[in-house]
Image 1 (cartoon, rainbow, N blue to C red):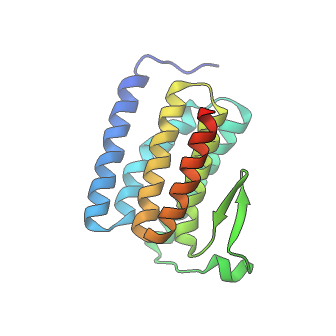
Image 2: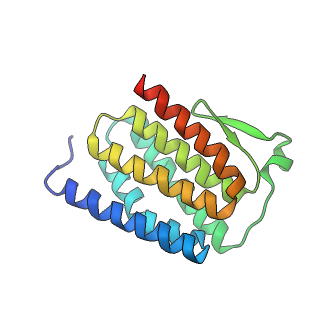
Amino acid sequence: MAKSYRHATLICIILSFLAALGIVWGLFQHEPLLIALFLLPTIIYEVYRTEGKSTKLASWGLLGIFILEILLILGKVNFDLAGFLGTKQKQLAGHAVPLGDIKVVTPTAMAILSLVLFTNTRGRYTKWLAVIIFITSFAIVYVLDPNLFARLLKIGVNEGLRQIQ
């Protein structure tokens, strides 16, 4: 059943503002937890708004990965996933995900799931939310690993160009 559009524009504007505030504050403090906490309302609203099977699964997966990221940051967990798996990257939703510290892999997976949501949904509000999540996930990655940020930016630009064509 279609969700109400009554206040969706206002909610998305507020969530955009919150995410931007979290990004600026988190970058200034060099604190990924700040950025992530300001993203939480957007992810919750995305879970609420999605309706299709694949998009609902992607949004719930996004929430699960987000919770994992919070736990990893709070627990100050450092785990080299690339070394453990014996590979530098894995495929997720058709995209090569660079591996390294698990705290960087989780926001990378969030960014890729937001691409899945953006490309598989028809709703303008769910697309809007996916863009907020994508940008904010990039900010988290930037704070954690600026080198990986450049590689992910290339993936995002390529996907955007593919969608335009």
